Image (tube, rainbow, N blue to C red; front, top):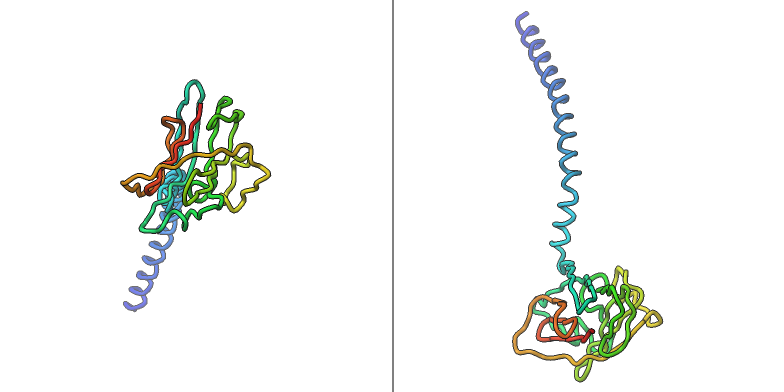
Length: 195
């Protein structure tokens, strides 16, 4: 008779633990799910920073004109950049992933040519020698950069003389500085004059 009582007691104890344990687990799961949902924005931000080519946004002024730029910032990582990652004589998204875009609050002059206020994707055509072509295209929200580029949407094309520097810069940057916008990557410095 002792064995059935011990077995029954063991069964009741296990059943109680399972019953009360499940109640506690449900509460914990709910709290845990709430924490995960609250933390999703933080996780999304962290994943943006963990991209191979982080998304960068900058803002500044050129005279009395506000300017915003968004671009993916790739790194050299020991690769050949010019003529390979960014092929010569082909449209390049001037960044990584989505198309780089610029937004002007007022009309500007780019390399002496008029460009109306607005938002534009920024492309370039690298050249082995001589000036590069700089393109402002009306289709600014392109997920896959130059793969979706369409010539018929070009609003302005200008020429800019690249400067090749001695030191190499690992990660691409686009800055708002004299003479307007300056693209730097590897040994390239590409100044784009804006007034």
